[in-house]
Image (cartoon, rainbow, N blue to C red; front, side, top):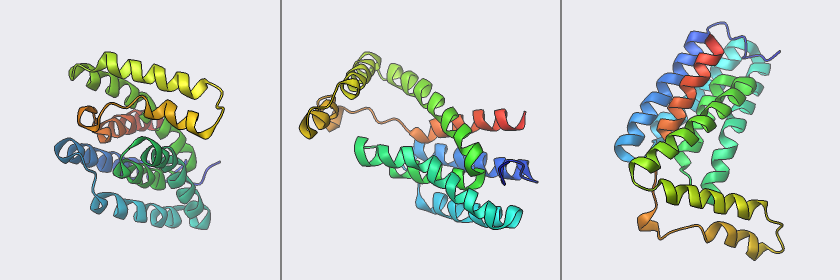
Length: 187
């Protein structure tokens, strides 16, 4: 059993996650940024509260949850122009949730991100383009890679000029995913 899965104060644990995600979503909507002044203190307090609740085992699980939740978003930041604030936000939430709840959070944020992304693209008249890019990238990712240049071209050829890229505030999808994850954990 996980040290943080049976948190003695689950309403506090999930309240911090939801409150942080909601504030991040509102800030992301307004400025398209999720500031370090929000994410870094929450990320630092996660292992601290885990240590109080479950000792060193809790700290280790908190750090593992942080790494697990942040990793896909770090990769998106490095390779697909994702936001660094999104990665730090997910790491902060994972630090409060631990390993098992971070898996639930990742799944919920993925579902929320897909749905929100499609709705966002539709609202901005870019649904067909977005679906076309997705199919093209997935087709390129599934094709056998003959050399390094072929692999990078599969992703680069899907890009329109930067001025026309549709950049959605992913903090909203993270909040919606956190809401889903909270419901599944507390109900």
